[in-house]
Amino acid sequence: MKHTHLSVLAVFISAALTGCGQSEKAQTAPPAPSAADAKAFLTEAQADIEKVQFPAAHAEWSYATNINYDTAAVSAYMNEVLSSKVAQYSNEAARFNNTEVDADTRRQLDLLRNSLTMPPPADAEKSARLAKISSDLGGMYGSGKYCRSENDCKTLVEMSAEMATSRDADLMLEYWAGWREVSKPMKDMYAEQVELANQGARELGFSNASEMWRGKYDMPADEFPKELDRLWGQVKPFYDALHCHVRAKLGDYYGEDVVPQDKPIPAHLLGNMWAQSWGNIYDIVKPEQEMQVPDVTAALVEQGYDEIKMVKQAESFFSSLGFAQLPESFWERSMFQQPEGRDVQCHASAWDLDDKDDLRIKMCIQITGEEFNVIHHELGHNYYQRAYKDQPLLYRNSANDGFHEAIGDTIALSITPKYLKQIGLIDEIPDASNDIGMLMQVALDKIAFIPFGLMVDQWRWKVLAGEVKPEDYNKVWWELREKYQGVMAPLARGTDAFDPGAKYHVPANVPYTRYFLAHILQFQFHRALCDIAGDEGPLNRCSIYGSKEAGTALNNMLEMGSSKPWQDALATLTGSPQMDASTIADYFAPLKSWLDEQNKDRSCGW
Ligand code: X8Z
Ligand code: ZN
Image 1 (cartoon, rainbow, N blue to C red):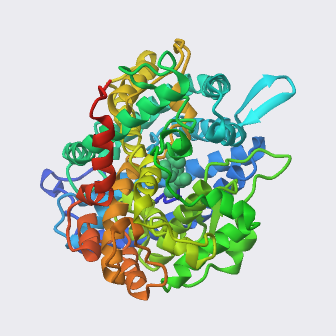
Image 2: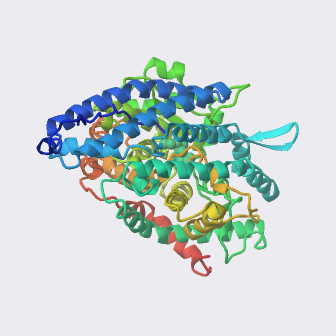
Image 3: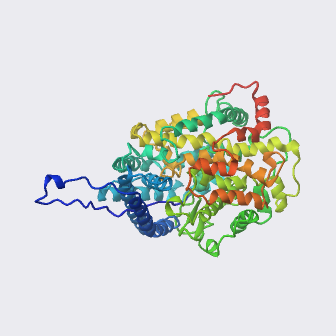
């Protein structure tokens, strides 16, 4: 996550005078605002928003790294001030709807109009309530724990770590259900928040907040879901094959009474609290033939890596591409470890506190290969933020939100055996006979994720559009989980359950389609950068480490920020303005053939 709240607006006071003595003739319409007025408005709006944005970011940082009553109050207040300001300016931008302006001015007006995620109503009490709910939901998630008894409470980080390696179905089921107790009390607050944000959206001229969420992609809001369906259609055959194999192997391991072979997979057995990525069960689903696959977790532990050393190693990848090192303040101000004695929001995020160089990450780093990837993911945000920092405020953002999420992941795709050997984490590069194992490991992380990345906002768009009422929140959530992912709740869900709230981005109001897009885009970026780096081997073995040419090409796209439609940014790097999942098919082609062979006598589907 990164904060990019835009804001501002000085209330435009209509100059129309009312008064006595005005003749009929004098009542002419006020002159339409000019293009120069629009530019002046944007300049003023951005300057005004900036003034509040930075203190609001500091308040949010203080809250996320120290959740308590006071930090909650300050962060809710600052968030309210900022978002009300942006809402006012967004409203005012409509004044220029009929003004003829240049493309750049129009783009900035549109970005401003659609910049908020949860737009506050103009009513002061309601906007304060919305800010308080948002802040409370975030705090409930961040401080949430599951208590097995009075003195035995587990944090999400602890339970996640155990679920990554445990093969005890009962224990995993207990944690799965225990964590979902945390979100039950969120349900009514969430429903109230939806109502308030929709009022805010209507005041800005949208039919609801769903329309705003879908309208941020340089195409009509109703076209965007079709684009997602197209991309999902490209990936689905491969996902189905992976699902079929994984379900069969889980059935062998846990028994077909636990994992029925004609139903969705029970969600607690996939090595992850949300069944969103499955890399942690590689040992259960791996090919029977012995495969050498680097164990990055073991290598990091053996070589005595600590949190800082992992981050330094990730930084050095970016440095090898020609990006300037992170500033001293990054090391002083970031949070790399879960502190003792206070609650924090452990969910990883990257921050830019001043749009100059106050970059930070906030993570509760575990010494694992998975977290090593997350560190690259977060630094990708920071390098993007730095690359576009000289753009005007409204362009200090990624081309679309999927781009922001894709950059660090793209770099992490270059953590190949070749690279691991270069940095001394492994001694030997496994030969091509091991590729199926290595591709399986990547597919469990990346391909398994894709339908989850899609379904979260399929749910939220329906909720925000009012198509799904609070009493059906949980039911529809599980319908979508089953439809897209083919996973099911391992226990009957009570009427008070609010399982979406057990996933960070729902209480935190972070849109999720960005991760779906990122999982498509990162393979396109990887291929383009590998071409530029002159790596001629297969994509899964390519690492762009050390390629200044690749770094320059990447930076050229990053520094555009959101100044141009994302299609232009995409074409700048890849030569094509289309998102396209065919690169995924190419990357994993040998694994797909292998899976089809494994599945040939199985009955797939759910
Ligand atoms: O939330 C994140 C990042 C922070 S922007 C760690 N991710 C999603 C998640 O954890 O659910 C990265 C992949 C998907
Ligand atoms: Zn991210």
